[in-house]
Length: 67
Image (tube, one colour):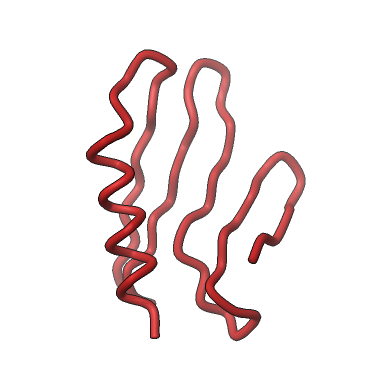
């Protein structure tokens, strides 16, 4: 499920609030806010030339942690 906001995309598992990643474009990077629980949010800034593997695993863990 996607909630498209101005210049941002928020991925949710359902309509019941539980978003797990908020993607916000920056000038030379992308800012990702990854939420594993309501109290735990991690912010990652990915440059255009950075490896996405570690961040992809964080997103997968956040998705799987949502009930």
